[in-house]
Amino acid sequence: MTVTKYYPFKPFQTDSFFDELAGRSLGEFFGTQWVTTQPSVNIIEEEGRYVIEVAAPGLSKEDFTVAIEDHRLTISAHLNEENNQTTGKFTKKEFSYSSFSRSFRLAKDVDQEAIDAKYDRGVLHVMIPKVAKEAPKTIIIE
Image (tube, rainbow, N blue to C red; front, side, top):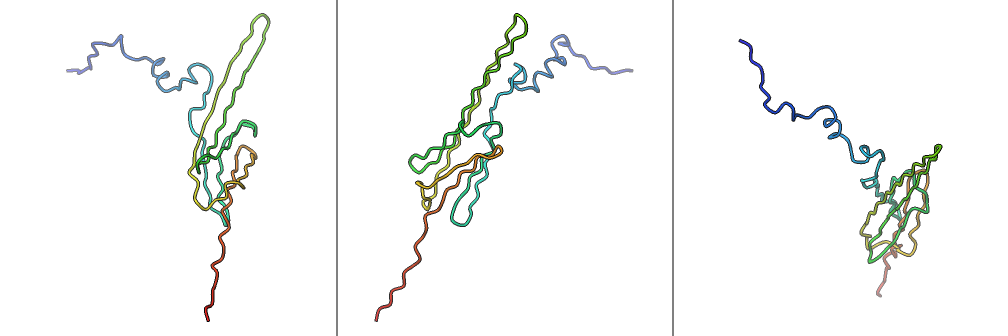
């Protein structure tokens, strides 16, 4: 006796097209890659300052906005790209938009007026200096 599985809805089962589609993002399906994730961030405490490193390759210095409001540091970037290709009588025009925004609550011991940033080889470095603490005064009472 041979046992075989019976599939009453075999015509409605997924085939390779739907299996492949289920494993792809919308960006891949429509032929463009959209940035939908936040960039990786390193936060480092050094002697006298904090450093925030944001991995954002492919951007330029002008794409970033670094702002401070109510003891909150916000790093954001917005990139619009337009790609035009003309072949014979046809023109192909593609738009690409990507953006992100990350916010960080600043510690009480930082100097907000002296925060500096630089973009180098795909990484944004934000240097946040700490306020210099005064050495405790020694008072001698005679």
